[in-house]
Amino acid sequence: MLSKLGWFALVVALGVVSACTSVTTVTPAGISTGAEPDSRLIGAWKVQFAEAGGPAEAYVFLMPGKDAGLQAVAVGWADIPASSRTAADSEWWAAEVVTGKAGEHMFVNVRLVLENGELVTQNHVPNPMIYFPLRYRLNDDGSIGLFAWGEAQFIKEAIKTGRISGTVEGANVQITADSVSLDAFLADAGERALQVPFATLLPMGTSAAGTPSSASGASR
Image 1: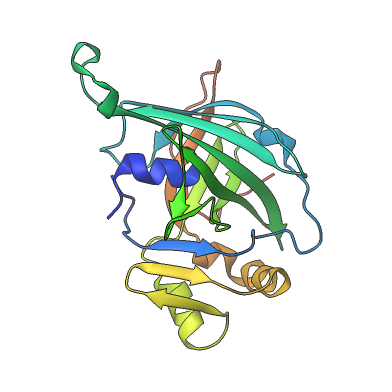
Image 2: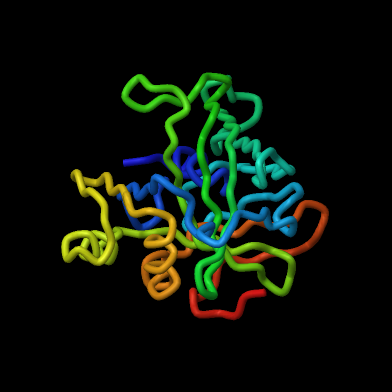
């Protein structure tokens, strides 16, 4: 089970939501017709988690990156009085971020690169090419609503029935479909697949506030 700080890393600010399932893809969601960064995400954001129990403070900074992507740095620290905090009570991450769109649904795909200054590895392989996708929505107040997989039962069933290719190993689910197949699936099922409110990104320097509303709300 991932801590809230751990989930914060996966989404780059972008506890636990209502789930303990990790869903990854081998290709970013929403780029089958070409990758183009959503410049509306560039800036400094404060993270407001949908559920209690997260870091006392969490922030993400999104900047233009290379190869039609974005780069992000995220920082967060535990809900402990400042006078009592140690280095172990705070964490930071750097990541590559790819934005995309499938049908009417917008996605942010996070690939972690550094965790507290150390290269991220998987099975002893540095910088694994795996992505953590979230659906996002731009709200009228300038904030960004982020939506996660939840328990991912929908995607597990889709893999089991052959609707989308992937693997399920306990709480770890990986979608192995190619970009075209992934986007075709998410264009139809993106809202049902990623429906759990995870967090809201509040633009720094404004009074925007609130938590993600229902996944069926309007986007822009």
